[in-house]
Image (cartoon, rainbow, N blue to C red; front, side, top):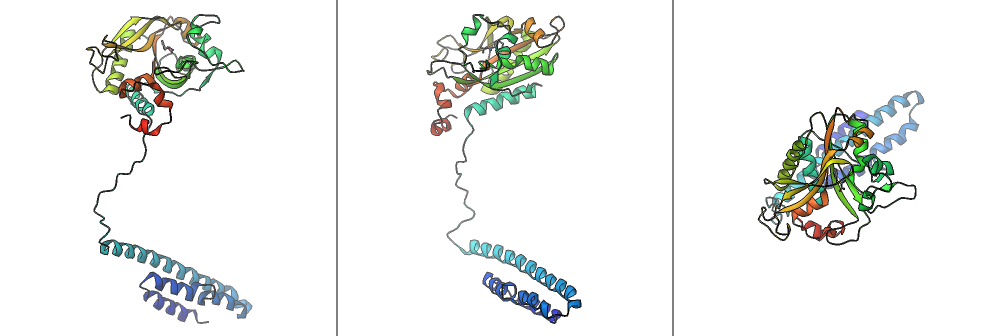
Length: 339
Ligand code: PHE
């Protein structure tokens, strides 16, 4: 077999190819099952054994070269044919803007959470995740809430059969944070919390909180107020005032309830703020010395603030949603309408 001649023949045939049909015909003639190149392989057995190796290698090279030439050419022709079709087909106007198909939305809770994480992140806070299940120690004892303490009744707890709980508040991660990062750090840790509540427009059994802590030397409530105002301004895109009222939590001393000026009426008084100009926003305070101690931080040297706010509530305020149940409803249309 004169392989030089065959190569020349193949070259001529490839050069003559103009269309995809030509490609197909070429493939059938040379590379198909009963094509010329396949025939070469079959002819190997008629070649003297000592020449077979070299001939086989050459046949294989011809096969490979021919295939790769053809595939490349096929691709070029395909692109060219598509372009020609687009140019000549008057019904397809490739300059039209696209139809703006709906590609889905992020859940409103996710959207606010990302804003909250971005603003705290930019102020040097770690953003941490936490488990949904907490031990009794994490959820209560480590927060200075001993067994039989009335504060345990404030939170209708879902108990698991092994004595752990579905965490009733993100404070359940305070002890872990202190041990992991103490004695000087700032962190927020958002998470889903569970309470055995009767469902209504403002209570869900599963809701989100964001907890924050800042621990170090010379930390005060003034720092807390500053960070809360920064966060509220970033989420509501306007200046939001805050005020503190005395509160009670076993894990903070002193404890406060923080109110935000009503974003709906700019504190003039409306139905959301019940004409007071203020909405309750979160619990907070200076971390109780016992809590620091249980987290391995020396309370005579270090102190810190902690806060925990309802992310679900923040989303309701931001988007003007008056029924919390829509967030867990799985009603995609209603969720997409929350802008
Ligand atoms: N854990 C409290 C709650 O769920 C909020 C809180 C967090 C209060 C941190 C003070 C400090 O209501």
